[in-house]
Image (cartoon, rainbow, N blue to C red; front, side, top):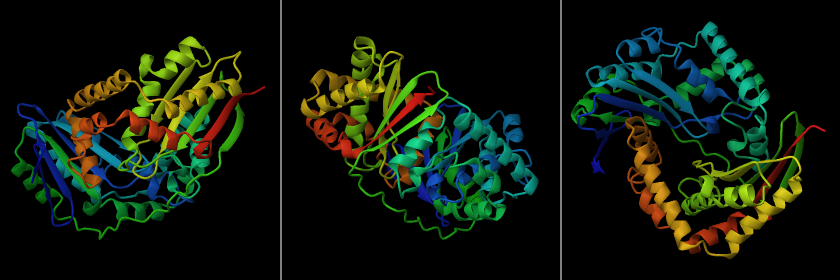
Length: 414
């Protein structure tokens, strides 16, 4: 089937194969996306998805060092893990492209889980946990906010895990079961962008991935986060240079109707130097030294976050009051047409430049396929352009309710 020049098929073992031609390109970009992230972990064993990503680079019997053969072939590779998915991506010269298919198929099923190697990667991830969460100013803010916003859904912990004890102490058998369950062809999408024919892509996928049996994977049912009806507040004191104010509001997931209006709102408020927050709260009123608004973009019900720093001489209470005033204005007044148009144009520009990269394009179409709608990625510009001022106001009225909010005062030690 063809969708916006994308060819696709499904192997007998359930692996979804996507191909987008890039005539004349010297490099081929291969993304393998697994439908697994921190959301699939157990409350008592968190950080596994991220730890497993590290282990996937530690080699197999056939490929003892994953990076070495790729670099020798002129290629590069990397990966990312978030709460919803894990993605591995490789770029190689066209003449060496088959190497990516062999190596990715090998580590889809042959990670050895050698105790020595696992222990080495545990220490690497523990150090990362310490550097990013414990020893960096404001580093634990995201973890605190997640625990405030979510009470039953596994979004209540970060990808790095709830605590480094989980990374240090989770039995290898638990990590292995996680790998066996989720690292399987019927829970994966492979996307290929490059100047090679679709028939060649299918041939290589059948050759290297085809023999891997399906796991019989069934997408697990996760608990639905109950609707929040009362504001949740917390104050912490840490050794930080400035007071910080964090606010969050529950919104829908990536496929819900409010996703695009909420994303538009985040750009209206925090679209660089011309956003309302920067113009009014930083430059004019000087109530903040730094402020940003963004959405999580998560598959299940997500969050609209506001992260800010409050300079000395301004109380956090005054800063919060000013933020609420800005949010209330969005609930009462329609966004002017020129302001809305600016946001639409900015998205279209960003969308175009993001997709100039074969690596980004491959990742984006794989994500769209994982969500079950291959068309959705290429329809995003028209989805943003279709958002009206009335929809922005309606979304703001539902979003910016006190009972729908979490507020964290992250203050300097006295």
